Image 1 (cartoon, rainbow, N blue to C red):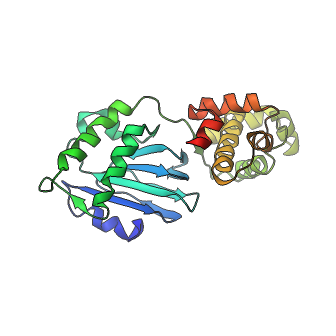
Image 2: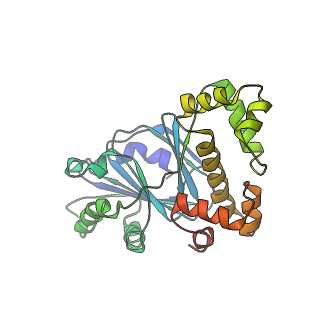
Image 3: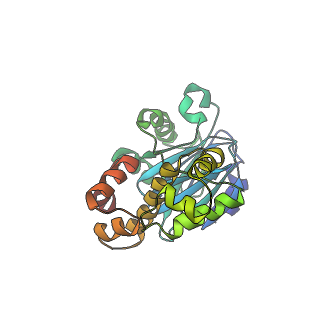
Length: 261
């Protein structure tokens, strides 16, 4: 049973934890549930869209989606396994962690605990089941693992002019892109372009450019065996060291470490 078909099942027992481990559908359309969702992305990349923002979830990261939050989930790589637990929400007020969407690096301990839950795949687990205390403990340790959220957020916009500019940036990532050059390309002033980015995306030109370069780099690292030097060049960095520093700033690890993991 795929995730879309399982959505009604998740809601059936409010006090339980519903467990699902699967190679997920490519796109789960806009939905919400009455339980908090803990998911670990194994072997690929996922994208969560809430409102006008898309959050990027690389491999070896987990995310928490609070109950009642509408979202779209897209899997960007066919080999991705999504390991999800949908938790009862009666104790969510005990910690602010459970009330906000977050994406975090997954520790070896958390990965091992989530993998252990595969024995309950496709079913509800409640207090009447053996080892339910294990799932209670798993939920309780999540706030302690909340060390540093991953800041890879891609805002979207319905502004047609900005959509054309974004498409241009994505198509020419490997080139030397400057606000002066892009302004000239679209026959607007630098000041107008800066205001467009701030007004429609709430990001500066350089912040957005750096973000889409990092997202493209993550996809290339996960989906290809190309060298880091080739990837750095393709996403617009003139040196491997500057690319590596920027990548670490976003993901907290070097590109080579990210590939090994």
